[in-house]
Amino acid sequence: MSPEHRRTARPAPVLSWVDLVDTGAALVTSAVLVVVGLGITGAGRVGLALVFVSFVPGWAVLDYVPLAKESSKAALAVALSLTLSVLGAASVLWLHLWHPGAMLDTTGTLCLMAVVWRLAYPGRRPRRQSTGEPDRTPVTAPRRP
Image 1 (cartoon, rainbow, N blue to C red):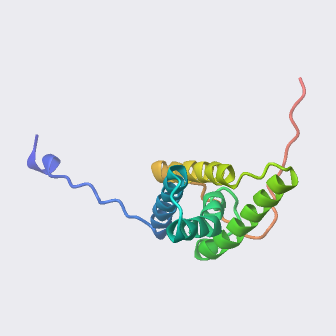
Image 2 (image 1 turned 90 degrees about the vertical axis):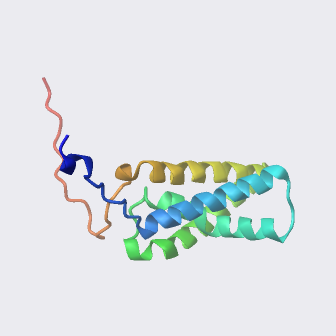
């Protein structure tokens, strides 16, 4: 092999702020699941749960719903997280299935799966941009034989 083939350097992967937030969301979710699973109580658990509930569910869903541009994702994630958390809590309360630990475990597991998927397969991240205009793609009827 020639020397230029052996010394070909691969470019270092560039992490975007979205990847860093994904990593933080995965760490917070993992910490919440461990703390709840071990039955640890105290201010740390309350703080972790508050950070989790107010940010991670919305962040996990936001890439799959084309609602925001890159610059407003973090703010919209908070609003979406609180909305999803309140809807989930109200639903299980009305159905008389109130188990906050089970709800937190389920939400945490689903969020962790979504965030880790995006980190593991960055090329498969949906990159749809919302322009605010309706989709004007022509629809054709299927041909009949």
